[in-house]
Amino acid sequence: MIKHQIRKLINNEIWEKLEVAIQEAKHSRAGAPGMMGDREFLEALLYLLPTGTPWRDLPSELGYWHAVYMRFRRWEARGVWKRLWKNLQRESFLQARRLFLDSTTVRAHQYAAGAQKNDSHQALGRSGRGMSTKLHAATIDESCAVALHVTAGQAHDSRQFEALYERLDP
Image (cartoon, rainbow, N blue to C red):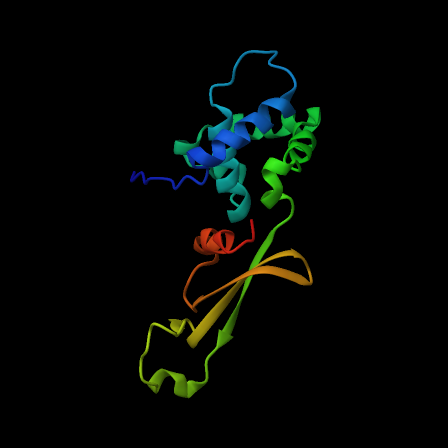
């Protein structure tokens, strides 16, 4: 069986801030410490939730699926998720209050493929149905975009988060 490296999403800078909010949300340190830390637990959730992967299909590199599932359920039952969300509303997490990311693909005219190439000013790429451009947007609600980023049509949405985040006003 081939094992592959799982890409982690929580870097050290984010974890320093997030760890404090999590400890405050948990309220109590009662009970035996879990086999996996909170950071590993959140990494497993961040892998599962966006992909829609069933709990049982969690890669073993991210922990035992049942342990992740049970901790998720316990945190829900004890209100940890609600308290964590409230903690993230503080000033130190201002950017994380409510930010929605989405993209749309704009198909290029059929003659765009024959144009002279000037890559420095174009975001034109090949996707499944020909030439296209993708517009990525960060919004705070359904009508207010706060950051935009344009890429070639084949660019994946998840890889554009950092570029959008850097464009946000401080």
